[in-house]
Length: 173
Image (cartoon, rainbow, N blue to C red; front, side, top):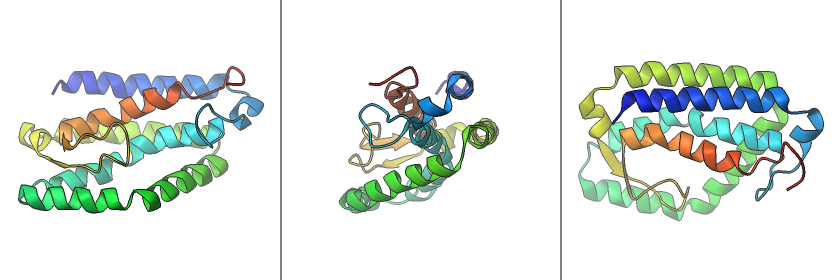
């Protein structure tokens, strides 16, 4: 894993997030995004959420990654079976967070989570980053059947870039 590349990606996403909010008008934030049921402001919160969940995903890797592989595969199947409730919570959480936390709150939270991810990444050992587990691939198109902690650190920026293309801040889709 190239830690420097992950650090650069985190900073690029932080800078882009600030830029998106800085140039967005209230009307643009309220506009519906392209290909989702969220407004642009709600989608921006969802993009932030991709970084917020890394702590939980990393902890899952640390725990489940130490168990026998069959346990991890079974856990991934259980999580895949719960895709529908996950989708509801994912949608509602992003809707609620994006509806209540405005641009200043979102950018401040984004800064805090990125700073925390930088610090945590710097503390990870090579063995930590190589540990992995099976993942529920139905939850997100960027989840692969088996992900290492290094993969988990790379995930939110792929998620961010994907949803960046769905924003309609410059006009209707």
